[in-house]
Image (cartoon, rainbow, N blue to C red; front, side, top):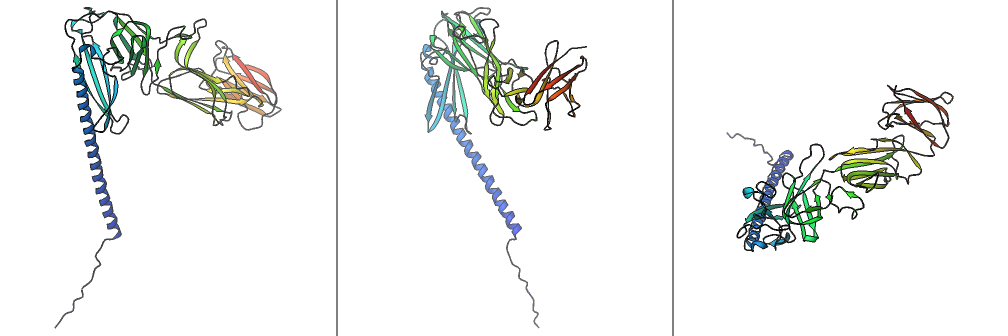
Length: 458
């Protein structure tokens, strides 16, 4: 007897979900291997570049070691010699930048210049720093540095006419300190000096062996995110008395120059109407920032590094990025003859601090507009009175509005799109601790009225 057995057939294969999972796993494996290979390749390239830089730095140092002592130094440097300050070198198809800095060292072992004991022969030895960098600003940038000391042959001899120039760079903002890593460009064509050095961790640069020269050392200090500061020649070469004059070196002495360098700030000026809508192409002025100097005669007016006289753009804005911190005064330009300033926030002048962004809003109105601008001040010092209540009322015209003064002490009527008519209004100003002021004002059609109210303390 035979038994028939049914054999079920199953279709072998992947479902859609299984296929998607497989694709995801393969993609993950591929990306992982790619990242591993990519990171490994970058590491190999970086290591190769670093080894090339080390070899180049050692090669340059070996060349320096074979020079005469008098020739160990940089061209146009304070510690002068025959070595270029900067040069580009290509090794194995890679371009390297070589920067050499040479300086005399006044070792405290035998005293220092001006110290106790006083070491008049302070050129104890030279130090040479060679920095080799590559791919500046690129993804594989880097640098290596080698240093070496060079001792003079024979006994120390004092160098007549040489001195020490110490340059201290620091911030005078709140919490400020020495500015480390700032580039200090020292230029003096009279003694053939043209050198760029970096401030140390305390914000200082020490130039030993600087040649004697009176107010001829031109110094420019710069650093990313900071203002750029340059010394100026004294009056009359500069039309005013500069704050930072060119430095001097007197032979056989320790000479110090202090330079303030602060982080920058940003300012944006917006011109708007009484409803807060942008008003484009308004003439404005902005003056202030870093004080460069003062006038040579009374009233000794200050000169600042920012003196703008222009206009906002078609959108009613003007931006000032990366400017010096300090006090700034602003307002409408004298060329702005069709508009009147009816308010500002903040008030002028104001102080911009480092790493801050200030938005200035200038409220303007057409001089042909039917309206009134009221400015409330204190009688004692004419400063704006904040928080004063200003009421403008005309019973016949069914108008009665009250506005409180802001930081600028100003209010403007009308304060909405409602029709505002010419006429005679009752103006009342009250403020806590001050005597009330009540008077009548006439507002003419097609003419902006300006009213100043002086409040006397009770």
